[in-house]
Length: 353
Image (cartoon, rainbow, N blue to C red; front, side, top):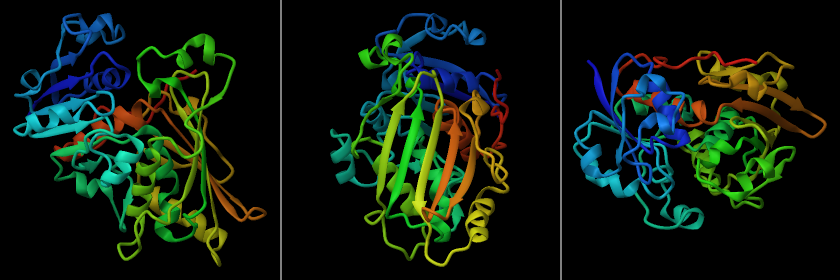
């Protein structure tokens, strides 16, 4: 069966990456691409690298244009997807790459985003541990999927094995991320201009203000055994730093080692969680990833160190924020929900140099 697909926000970075992956997918036909201010223009005027889709023209983003497809991807700015999702009730599968359907708590939404709160959808991180199982099991029957925040999924995948196994204390997590500016979208912003970021590293959303914090706490809470408490005692100091690379995340996450846990038990927690995974891979002891290793790939590569002097575990994880962080996670989740091979149209191979 070939599934008809519409992609909104197709002139942006996330929409463009979804299209790049779907263009090589044998089970989908990209019929419709939409935008707002760029509607009426050829897709390749804004995504000139997508030569196989040169026949497509950007249409207005309206419920009427998006309706009538088997699958709809929404790659819109945060707070804009919800106005369309209610009108797509007849669409068999809708995947939102924005934040509108990620959070389960309306209070957290109000605190970090504001505006109308929309019902939470199935979270689109297949490898994430959830109460002793993997999120992919829930995705198999999903018709509404919330693709993750790129920073949030990177940190959550980094630490979920330790939380689930009880080998780390989630009450004192520290995460510092080097991130590329493509994660902020394509809109012109002074702080994202090349003259502002080249040759510099710039922290932002410092002091617990980043919008992905509640998403991380929610995901790590879900990783615990079902008898444990929720997210209220999961505490994280989260600091992203903008660096001059167009795409990529290098997340360094640390947490205290739980009392009485051996080094072997710590490493075993991550090996057990990801040993059979295709797209999330734990590197050999003493090895750590670079963002260059995952460029263009749907992989999360991580290295783990045990710092007994500080009594902390350190996990360093690299992802391409536009692939595994967003579009790759969305397509991977789509594959699972439609009963297709999970790896279809997704690669573990990056681009080098």
